[in-house]
Image (tube, rainbow, N blue to C red):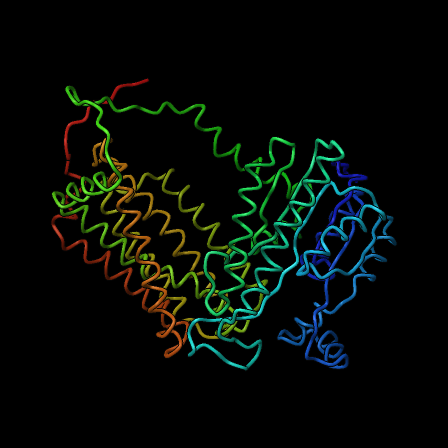
Length: 490
């Protein structure tokens, strides 16, 4: 066994009687860490016979989901002990803040002070703003209530924050110098159709985690977010020291190239003095610049429409996987990972190839072709999940080329002293399209099915960028030199 420095460390894992939490406990135990497992089995509408039958059948659905939640932790503790590990367990309802110090007391009495805290517990009841999405079928989707919102935030957000606070206070009291916190979130924390309170509470977890990471580093404590799908795969595929190293490795990969790249610094125009400006005046200046350059303005309008179409597509992806294809978490993780990998490969391909001689041609061609991949997703039959994976992967690959060539085109043509204003305005305008798209996508998908939005998005992408070939102001963007800018090497 490869020793990683985790041996004899005490690891407290919440929500660990099944799923990701149980897999995490086994992974830590395999590294000779002492594992304390806690979980909470809330009231369930299914009988013991129904839960047993669901476990035996192994068929997805609410009954199996509840059956996994209702498992006691003792079998996992016995498994770890049979494998030569050290483990203990106790059930606590972390929705009650009074239980949090009691949990730490129990862990310390059984195994010792906590070195690694893994917050994995969760509360999830599907909620929606849209009455048309409310249903009693399957897992059910209900309209939000004060009690429902409070329950999500009590367990998912407040308990995470109080767990971290309790961990830190005890860490400081004993004068420790090494600590780790891992908070499990979700890949859909930014937005989740028909699961709004769950997503919002997970978003709060991520905010708490980033704040804690900024504040606790001085004490030797790192704070990381593990967000399935990729987080789930990492927890299952890597030893725990590998998961803990991901942030360090990726940061090093991002920063290292800057040590070897000389970045040219634009010289200030002669005679121009620095003047204090407001945010609004800089936005107005950026807008005036865009109005004077029709091609760039049209390009930004294209990107705004694409964001209006694609933000809902991203939010609807979980429903596409579960409702249209009838698949589950593993398949959702598969398609998310495929999209991420395709983005990376597309960026690498553009870096190696460089694109066509005219950047605008690269941008327009990749935009048209990427729409074809999205259309494939929109027409894939219910048994064609992997066809949809291929379509999304192809689209992701081409969108990476589209984004890279569009950014290069804008950066090479906009004066450096205007880029901050222009790109800031462009970012604000494109982000503003997201809530509009989400507001439209819900009713449309409810009326015509989730797939229709992918079909519309793909066709829209191809048509919008295809139309660019017939616009002289767009096709001549490579030829535009907005002004002569002196560049000095530093």
